[in-house]
Length: 97
Image (cartoon, rainbow, N blue to C red):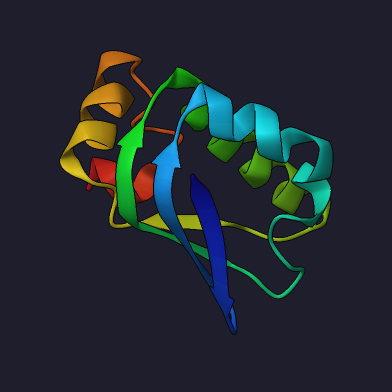
């Protein structure tokens, strides 16, 4: 299960960012985070797979299309390994520092 918990300009993802969660949330992807959200807090994720990374990239793309920048924060170690494995450090700027 995956939850999007929004408080002001921050949205915390809680649970599993898996293929199953992505399939469940994809039909409503445009409304997963509000227009005021500029920060995604990933500290509540207990698991992510490549489908989850694709969702994060898509959310960032939607924000860019809307003229906003979406910053990703506090990725857990398992997600950081995937970011490194797929050489996505440039995309996940927060994780590359």
